[in-house]
Image (cartoon, rainbow, N blue to C red):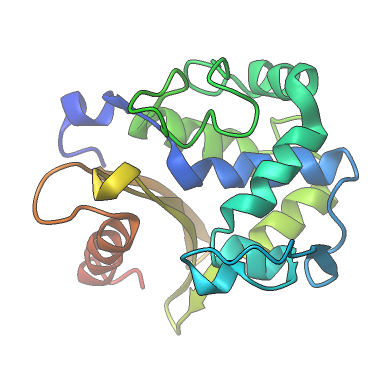
Length: 213
């Protein structure tokens, strides 16, 4: 259900929700091991998010949204392969011209790669329907690391994203409930300090209100 078609078609930087597809591409190219094997070797540089200042598995890096790990991965994938995969899956504007390790981050105050909530939903539907160039094994690994919570009503999977200086928030994912999968994308740009955390809380409340979670 899209309560506002105008906002649903509004394109924003994907921020950390792009880690969904960065992960899949890395898995498909053999650049990431299994979910719980050591993947990111910390370089010893202390960063403001403490969860980034450790060696990490894929599961851990995805959970703490470790930017340095995914920047290294993007460089390993390279411009040519990244462009190839984004064109194959038809990801928003498909524009990575801001730089291979920053294009999804909106670091310069603009983002050439942008995607709408409607497009995020279409992408996840295609992925879950097996209509993207990724193996079933790698999709299963992604789903495993995306899993957030399981209740007696359903299982929630998702990824947050927060804009530069708390300018916006994303929460995209899907819910498995009673044999049905519900795909969603929520983005916010208004209110006090919009963020991925706030978008996630909004979506979880909506799913609980509908008795799905």
